Length: 161
Image 1 (cartoon, rainbow, N blue to C red):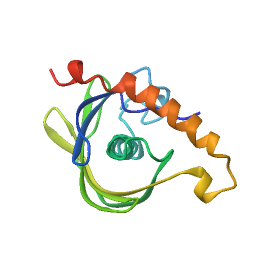
Image 2 (cartoon, rainbow, N blue to C red; image 1 turned 90 degrees about the horizontal axis):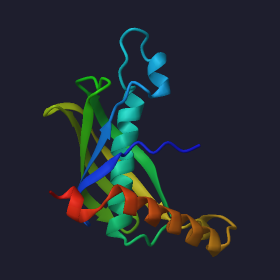
Image 3 (tube, rainbow, N blue to C red; image 1 turned 120 degrees about the vertical axis):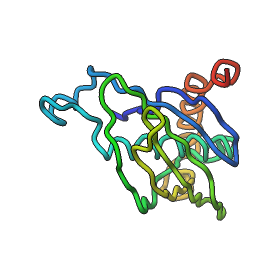
Image 4 (spheres, helix red, strand yellow; image 1 turned 60 degrees about the horizontal axis):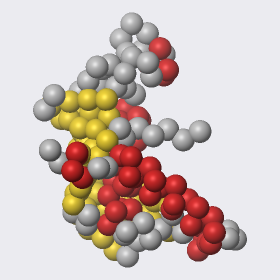
């Protein structure tokens, strides 16, 4: 099962930047263990939200040319605040350098205007048919599903108001 942690894309400039949100609900199952009597979003989940937002930026920048966008590196990740149930993590990601299929990103997540997490990520985009003995139809299927999900997460006329 794949977790979709980005709830909504609120701003998008393909090739430049993205702003996305993740609202934390007490209904999230992992909060029962992290931590008992002090539920907060695990740091690795905060990092995952930054990665997922960055991946949507890469996909939109490349017009969904590649079916896969993977995290290659996470550097200088620093945590400075908690995300508690009822709060929203607002993530911004900016492309600082692109080298063919590698994207170097500067990311930050804020809660109530205060930085909770920041770091630099490197993402790589590719098609499965390039790296494995996969049929190109698999890439087409994955890309089609991603485009449908993107259409739910990002509705420009609603998101930008």
